[in-house]
Image 1: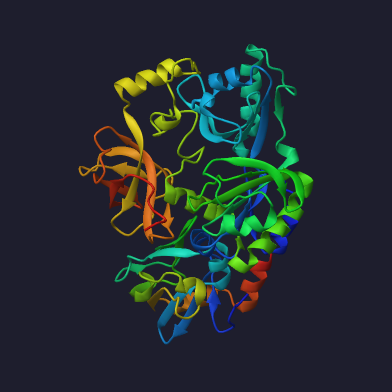
Image 2 (image 1 turned 90 degrees about the horizontal axis):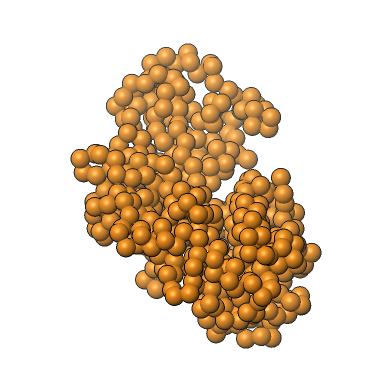
Length: 126
Length: 369
């Protein structure tokens, strides 16, 4: 199980990587493994300003449909363009090529509410 | 929770296990799409030991099966298999099944795991009315039998290594009782639920591990992989095969479901719901099970609504998935009259959107393409 220590995590298995006031968001290695083959990623919230916890997209595996939730409030700047044709990169490289969105954070203090690697590890082992 | 004799093997192989029809079953090993493509291009092995097996025997066996099943059992010969269903007396379906004829007075019925108890009770009740006795003429041996499906274009070639009986030329939907992988009395049938060719093999439950190991070993040089219920579902759906509980239920008739081809109104065959189904066949029905492919990008799922161009609901999805071979959303559902013609545009309601689809006649994927 790959859980990088430079990221922040949510209880819904999203990860956040911060670069200045922009947060990169994706789903964790654990999440992609549980979902199985991801065959469709739909993100239609680019340009929207959403609150933390709101749905920013949908991930469909062969057997399941899952919403993905915004870890921090802000404006969705961009979604990963490769996901529409090659959603499987989320399985192959969830923290890299399989990133989902970039968010311009409106309240970076919310980052403190997210889990660090130890807390996330503890949660998925529980 | 019931288990199959192979549960430990699945766990050792790292399968994701889920409860299904009361059994703990493998849903995937290497991944649904990888397993699916392996079956379409090479061969895969499925543990389908959860399926039910019920013997019907004795001098009344043929008359009884003609009464309780929709297909024409008199067309069978020894070694022939037939797809059929049990009409439920109210225009619905108790279950769909395979009928194996061993002799004029001996038949094996293979039924869905989720319906074993219901089917057996149904058969015993109907059997009692005709003088057949539970445990004697009607015998449920589901717990004593294991079944593997070996499916794919290379399956028969690989399995030939395990028996002296010639199997590579066997006709579709036939079977032989033979020694297989050193197991005497195995039932080897050229049936399956994938449209990829291959066979299904039935052995006593205590021989299941031996059979699995022999099959994996024989298939190794051809690239065999274990395949779970996830790919079993995507494979059957690409062929447009019905799944009981989704596409056919106790509320859907065989005529509505497009199973007229297994509903035989031949002379001398009276069967449960014959008059009602004959009327449906003559006068038509209000809804029919139809296949559709998504033109827009999206994946139809069970219970999603189906609309016409005016966004009036005209049906509901009963099964849907992303086709691993077509890389396109495919599905089936009951549609109102007027929307049955191939090419008819319909819209699937997916998350508050109307995604365009087109009615097609399954199979969605044709292996010879």
